[in-house]
Amino acid sequence: MNRIHSDSTNYSFPERMFAIGEEPVGIRVTPYHKPSSITKILNALEEDETRFIRESPFGKLLEIADKPSFSGRFG
Image 1 (tube, rainbow, N blue to C red):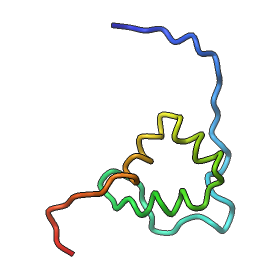
Image 2: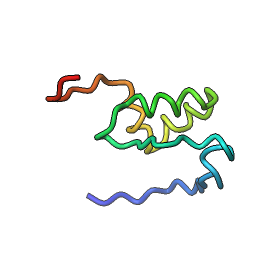
Image 3: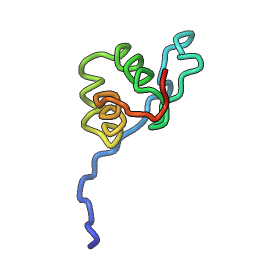
Image 4: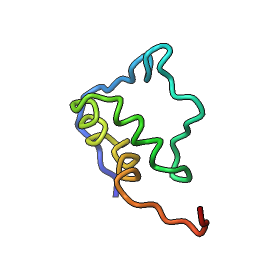
């Protein structure tokens, strides 16, 4: 079933995700990494920025941080 979206809103990405000198070092955000990385990024954002991300397709990444992770590893 194909749907044609009539939403003509253009979304753009910011030129920089982080302020110069404030880039996270050694943090990767994927479903295979600890959600604490996502939480660190969220803590640096304003409430309206977080809400914008939650309402976008990237909101799924934030759901990862909200759910407990389970692993076969101990420690």
